Amino acid sequence: MKFHFTSSNSKEAQKAKEDFVSSYSQSEPESADVIIPIGGDGILLKSLHDFNSLNKPFFGINYGSVGFLMNSANKNNLEDTINNSKSTELKPLKMIAKDDKNNSYESIAYNEVSLMRQSHQASKFEIKINDIARMNELICDGVLVSTSAGSTAYNLSAHGSILPLDSKLLALTPISAFRPRRWRGALLSDSNIIQINVLNFKERQVSVTADNIEFRNIKEVTIQSSNDKKCKILFDKNHSIEDKILNEQFEY
Image (tube, rainbow, N blue to C red; front, side, top):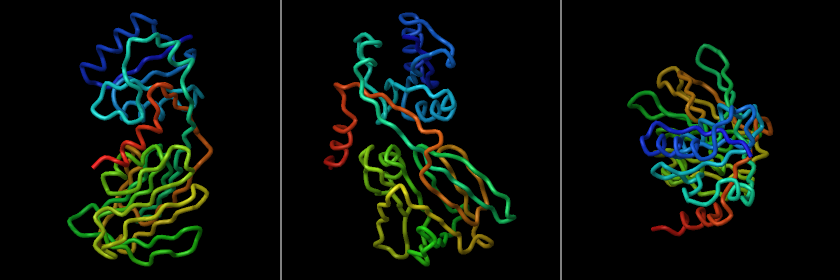
């Protein structure tokens, strides 16, 4: 089995990469059987964007602070661990945004698409689901749409719901909502099309970020789950991602 190892910039991750390359050798991404990101969830996310077109599975090894989507580092044979791992398919979000000059931008996100105010003033959003207005005015610092994979990241910090990876749901979560103050967001089938319009885009500028790609001065964003650029994430059968998700929900 051939591996391509990539790592974050931390000393621990880079040292681990050197050790893995020494033990298993390094293959070019195109000829590798598995892409091995080493570090935290950030390096896995970057690898998904960088190598998605190669249609290779990803097996992340945690040398970061959280590494929710990563596997624990162990001394077992890497090839045996991967051969016995469980596979989960991730579908990204497809985002189409339009700015105040009617320029269009398109990107994908494996974690979330988030809209945020660019100034000290709160933003006002209209939210449509499948062309039907479900919220006429949301006053807040921002709003995000998260995949199940991203639900334990920014979404969780904004008090959004944690989603099992096989749930086929998206989390729509407000960020510091002012009105309606008690609205905590919604869980939506990933077959829905979400449109978020910035009601005051001329006076109060808003940016949109798809994972780590940002566009500014946005007036509307359309978000939907996409079958394009799907990817496979491998998890050690002895360290279940399902258990991680359950543990997160019962921590207090």
